[in-house]
Image (cartoon, rainbow, N blue to C red; front, side):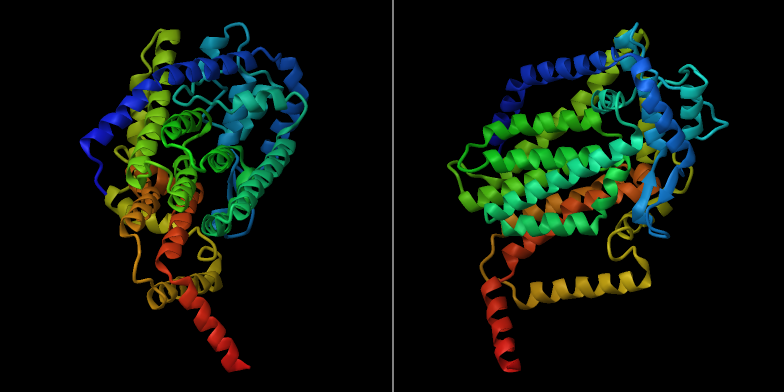
Length: 441
């Protein structure tokens, strides 16, 4: 699984060629945020009042299902996001977008702060500049005619439609293994709870959109265009996401792409080079676009954003965590894994999960192929393990927010299904199944 120096040079050259694309997309996305501030606050008021009342009556961290950690819904971040959107200043739009300020007091919950900002006209006094908050481009226009509960419903419909589009497109193309992986992953990671929180929604929608694009464009084509596509994916992830399961927008489309390319083997096919290039492109888009927000904010606001940003980065890495780093390292992975279905659904669910794991291991061992593509399997394994590396890198964040970061394992499940598809002798499995059927008759 080595990438030689020439390949690295070619990939870096391709990324450099995409610099104009990066700059153009940055200008467009920034302009869209500025434009959305021009929607008058009066047009938002009826829906914002309904939304503020809805969130005030909601639990900040309630459960869709009792005692199921994986069904925990985060209305805390949603309240902050609406507070920011409400406080955009059309008189100084660029500075307002860069600072992303909202009304805050430490003596109240964020849903109460939002309520006071809307009903008592409390002014913004706290900046939140470390994120782009690009979802305002989508939400602020919607809030002129929909309240938050109606937006949740709209997002649910969009999510289900996109999921079905990708799933049935995979089936139509006879890409059964990734279709099974996507379906199983969506179930096991509790994706049906995702649209109930704005915070959770964006990476799933982006991952599905880019997966649909991959399926539309990946047959018999060369690899270079994917570097641009994955760079834009990384940029949009940085733009929309609130640091939840950001790796999904890289891994789900990439795993589908690798499977497609393996089936078609287009000219110049190299899974390692393709994976390396797409990961570097996505990472460059994600990190550099995030940094560009801090640089723009520093220029527009006339003060360095880096001290504030570095403080929060250290906190999420666990460098300034309140608890023991050792205890977090030991428990962060089990906390995220324990949210998966059926493991996180009581004692019976735990037992069912253990049986399922044992059954998968049995099939993988007894019906294993003799001739497998070991490099391809190793590549899938590395990609499937990336969410766990993410948990360890963003230690404090993944430890505290395990109830939504656990969904990054959706990509792990897809990777596992693709590995099983490559290693299990399906013809042998089918023959033995048919033989058992005849014996019973």
